[in-house]
Image (cartoon, rainbow over all chains, first blue to last red; front, top):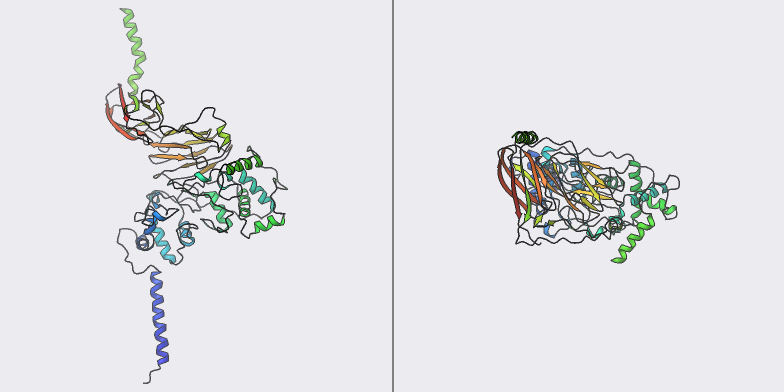
Length: 307
Length: 235
């Protein structure tokens, strides 16, 4: 029988590619490490194996953020033993839901050493989350919080941006973030996180940040950030102070602080002349017991002159 | 003779309630006479003029507050073992006030699960940021004129509290599994009344100088006096 070398060659390639693909599917990128037998449920056991391959160098064997790499990292890796997480859809002080942790794995944490772990398969991510939950006893006794309801976004108008500006002043966000959101407010230099490590507030005007925050990049993510707070950091939750419409107005104003980012908000602002008026054209003034905008600006200026 | 009897009867009538309520442990918390405690520093509130103008005299840090005769204030003295039960969870809230950019009181003691009411009396916003390790950490903003914040902690812990906006603001939530506790005053004095008979372990905790314990027995309605002398360091 004459061997058709061409067909044989092609079928061998297909066979090896096919079996390799099948093998890779079974193990994701997490292959070659034995699954430890540690008395955990099967998913968490697999997660333990993945953790030992990819995570413990920064997050530590005990999950307390004290891996051997941690000494060179700023910000420090997450300490899983307290159950406090920055990026959540649940109220401050509550445990996150699984999707919050998986989204953090997918996004990574911008401006930190935590990369995006998209190469991990979906099953790998779930196994990892199951293992992460074994580090804190809170997961045994507490239910995760109820994710906050985010109503549909309101329209981006000059009134919305102006009202957002008033809220920014009234809630005194500028004390840390500065009047222009450059992370240079009067309290910015002395901020420390819950491990007493120095930490800076977000700089909206920084071109390298462009549209990204530690916990996302969409308007919904921004909404979530100030309505749930970033636990473990100085950023508190403002959920008790803001109605949903007010919160959307604040989101729209915050986007205008990102002067280097092309956005609907910046387009609306530019079309209106580039300046935010003191009061919205149509709605009433917010009642405020604060010093006026100019007084607050002056104290901020005095502060920067002192430096 | 009759006067004496009358006198004794009147005394018994008035003292009778004391026989109902139990013993008392009281005393003072001090630092050792040979120690030099940490000096307190003046707080610079110039970055928050709305608070700075409320104080006519310099405001000092409150990490180590001392008094005459080597007294150590703000020491939490409590029954850590020997009480028959943990005591009922009080329904009355304890209050924590932010006034003049200071926490009043500096150390707030409460029973496990007792409600706390946190108020902001200042013309600036604050954020209340308790940093527990066992209880859940949370962080909430409280702007000018905002309503009180209600909170509670369900596990025993000594929780540091801070405001991130005003870095000099430090306080403590002390959550205990007992109703028998006291905070020593500026003269170091404290009192733990209404103790039923038992063998007690009394613990004294200071935010910088740690814990000391002593054991005593109460058999009836007696008053016992104890003293805690902490090892104080300058730094």
